[in-house]
Image (cartoon, rainbow, N blue to C red; front, side, top):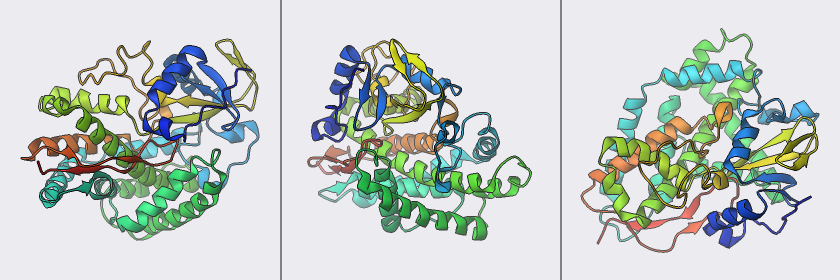
Length: 387
């Protein structure tokens, strides 16, 4: 089997810029077995989409291949159609019932206040001072819950995020499990005590009528939506700011409303937050000429697919009016990250806020990537509004 265990997603060079690595893999070994990940890795857009579309042959729910899944792992993201339909419909209907325009407006006003407060500082950290507090505020606003303390919640989220890479670093698994328990307790308190209008209120009011929806899935999905929305949004904001700092002319072009809408999508395609997701083969099959055995894991590398020139002409150029732009920055289909809508709203608010601020944002030091493979995110991103 074509094996490339030398590919290390946690290598500092790869963390800094994985796209030349993915380009080389696409050209030489587009489907390869990675011993450390114990997965078949896919780098071509067409292969990734074909796997993500085929729920029969490639399962998200590992119970379909005889693997036990702990209860905290059972949510809308771990179920396959048609079993997923009830809980997904419950949450999507609740999402559509929210006033997203108003939520986006509140996020933009909050950013204006934050930018004014940071305006005279010689240096600040985009991640700690903008991305994290904005993300927790937007997701809390959407769900209709009180904002948790950002310091304690950020550490919980970080443990969960790092545990996504437990296959590469087994020591992250147990802290991640404990962090999920802690977040489960917080979510349970929201269902029990929160009276605020919002997405969770809508879910609570309509969950009884969804007779085919297990209460466990509902609560776990609420946890996944809060954590996934927060972590995806935080990563996306940091990556977008970094890209805009490196392309100073791009921000001004997004004063045009149409370019703003398409440009936010292009920022996510260009350097997205979610690097990939896995499926397990339910029966012997093939991807191209590669034979996949039943029970083997297939890893669709979103970041590689989003720079595939067969799908995206000039993939390494930031084209704010790129169309079509069916990127995999948040996943695909029924397993698209359920934090996508608030993440896109936060990015539009971010761009609008930067355009409205009287001083341009500038880089103020060397950024540092977090050592995580599943989520591409900065640990530190220094910036300033001072000239």
